[in-house]
Length: 433
Image (cartoon, rainbow, N blue to C red; front, top):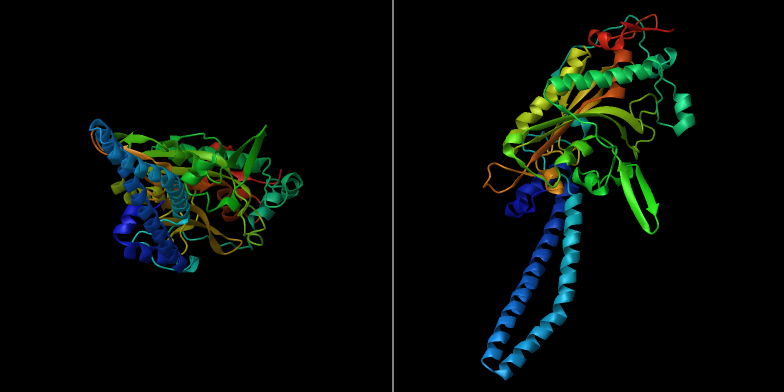
């Protein structure tokens, strides 16, 4: 949620920033400001009525003490009129406040001034390139074909169990997923991240806190538990960013505890609404996938520099596994809803001769903190301030496994494992048994 007070101070600047995402967001801001103006006008009216009622009550007491019955009766009549009018005005005020909050929740974060302006992914500049892709002396296969030939992936069984866009890893495939999760968590723990094993089901207000609701309701899986006349709704997490970031919701932290750095390895669940026809083969766009997520909670002045470190932590994984990759910065039109600045890491996929996203690292400023009411104090007497939140994939495990299969495939059909994983996996090569 954006800082409405700040927007009021310079609406033109906020309008221009949002319009860089898409022109319609500038128009949406105008609607929000009109709602805010109407709400504040009615709020003043109601507060004036409340103040007048309290003042009249005191005057009535004084009139009665002075035995001025005529004045007391006149004052009580005015109080009576206020009591008749105020409930309707207060109800309207409450409705306007709810509407104002709903529209505020639908508005994306303002992009940072350093974010390049663009319409879509075609306008994202490349910031850095890692190791160059290797050249094969044979036509490289895609990860699904490799995985099926090596007995690692079984999409037929997955479809029988759950339908399309699900993967079933088995044998050396299941072991690879488990090994990658351990490797990633161990690596990030050495970099100071607190390992967390969070719940996979969360309450609606938790989804709202990080921006999944109400904007992305159609992408979420939810459960409904009915007990008598009571229905409880819970959501399956689409990323452990949701659980980790909300650990500080409704809290006031001490400055000494910041930054907080947390990591979790969890399954993630997304309906991928609107993506049918895209990436129908393999594990690049599944309804369920595993991911290691990294979350930072920082002071406002530290979040942009923390974003740089977050990107380095995620990229270090690809460097250690000797995978060809690059870092791009997302333009205004391609950034996520909650982000003010984002870098994506893309890994090379030989079967497609293209880079594919494997990590996205974002600075969300105080956008999520305002939704969660997550704050900190600089000292014991200081006023609470909103924290800044950051998140990044560290990294998507299924996509990492796919990248390893494709980049380390051999002409004989086997896959050599990156040297770093040999001690975890127990062998140097995956081959047909």
